[in-house]
Image 1 (cartoon, protein in one colour):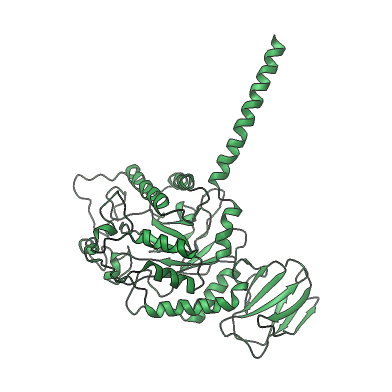
Image 2 (image 1 turned 90 degrees about the vertical axis):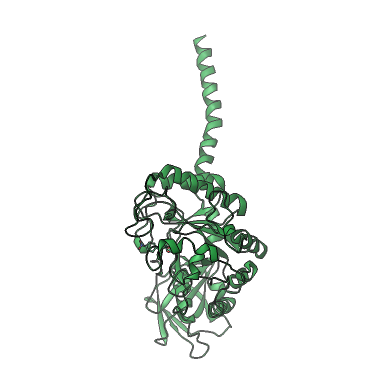
Length: 440
Ligand code: JFZ
């Protein structure tokens, strides 16, 4: 009897383990983004960031000018005049496409709390403007039709919602209306409704790009909970590190990915440090301000290519930002600049898309990328007629430019010296293709 009991117990335990263990494993993997899920994004390299809202009517910075250059009263009523008569989602997507960008990230809600989509949670949204059309819907559909991955930015902090618990809301000196009690739990429920709307009505999304995590009401526990919530709504979605508290300032890297969640680091307005073991994305403005500003200083083509190539050579992606005008158009000079970047990528894209950063860390002359047995040497500086590569573990079979021009090189026990061709140099980036006998 006892023996039978033991066998019976053993069988029951075994059955339970057989059922529960795989369940446990799949629960784990559905939470943590896998390298396979990250791959489309890592290969894409280049995306369009869009900061847009009623504030474009003022030409001041989105979110931050509320209660500063623009009074709270005025800012919060701008939506009543927001009439984007020239808005055409297909045109925007074509701009991104012509730039060689593979994904689009738009501010569904910035720090000012205005919602660019048809949300059921608040009337402070795009349907309450004279325009009365759902921008997020139109853009998501245009992206899907063009094979561009649609993604949304979402600010955790919200200086408009009374439930978001911080006194800085509404700018310095702002006082909560009498009788109002902020309630962070209720605010999180509001946020989760938003995020569910975005994912179910406009998804699947490529990335949920969080921001505004640095203020005190946001905690690591809340970040972890939100990460799991998003991944349960859409398994496979990629989420940046600003969902949690691990980011180190504008450098944007997560201090320790064991302690904090988020799938990639987010350096801001700077090219990230060389980092090939953890995904990252530099976000940067094509002009200076995130939102549209009349006559803002725009980056030159050389600067843009330098930023893109240095980022990819360092192991990252680039999310380049435009702020459309209040009528819904992207400034023509910005459209033209983006097209110039696209023209460059048309010729040199092989050395960017689907590559990995390095293996040679950034040098004074430029950076490297690699794919298969090919090493791409990006000469960004225009000084000097030779460059030296440190010793590679593989041997060189052939060195040339994309157009087939052979490039002279010499390998010694110190490394390889490459003589830069005198003609056919690209002042923005001369790409030298180095074919190796095996993976660099
Ligand atoms: C944040 C936003 O505030 C900004 O408007 C934009 O959306 C960018 C992509 O992300 O950038 C920040 C965040 C924090 C500070 C400054 C800019 N800060 O704490 O000074």
